[in-house]
Image (tube, rainbow, N blue to C red; front, side, top):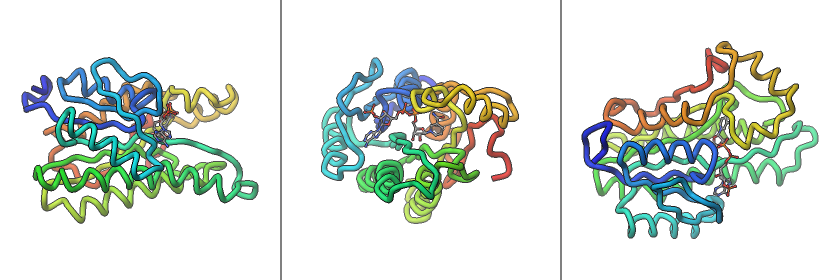
Length: 241
Ligand code: NDP
């Protein structure tokens, strides 16, 4: 039983759920009483979650991860495609490999997982896919032509999934975080961090738990009619986009 909604527990799969935003999302679903699986690439998993190894750039690995979750926890009713990387650099110096590597993980990786999730969701006549994008996807970000392109692509992916399967109660939504305190942003220099915080109307970064709140809401009954939406969790950083 999901304690927050009073509805039967669902099987939730969070990619890259071993750390950062993904781990916080997984923990929030565990706290609600859902059955939660996270993908990892050899590291630990949040307490109460099932860990399955998966590299989202590999179709066979994605398929095997879903199959293991289905066998152990039942069909995936909520997919959170969170796994993502950066490989920043100004476009004039960016290697094509650097561009494609980020697209392959962030955009094609989410597409592979969503494609694998769809058929069982249609069979169950319900499914929620939540794609973790970024403020950079709509706002643009100097030094991140690869990352911003991949994150913008997730909006088209979510809206196309919703148009294809919305009538059968399978929809996708996007969460677009701003500056969140994780390993990904720990790599920023203090100067660059201060500059970014200076552009945020709320004047601060956020915790991964603040992103998790939006994700669990999107997966729950209170957001039952929210489809193809982009929900910013950015302290106002991307307002107007
Ligand atoms: P982290 O770098 O802390 O974690 C990234 C996660 O993605 C890890 O679990 C990592 O696994 C996983 N991952 C990376 N590549 C792959 C792959 N090929 N296959 C499977 N898993 C993979 O990042 P965050 O928690 O900060 O970010 C999570 C998501 O949120 C990302 O999509 C990011 O773009 C997005 N985001 C983050 C923001 C921020 O400020 N932090 C802002 C906006 C969006 P492993 O541990 O094995 O490396």
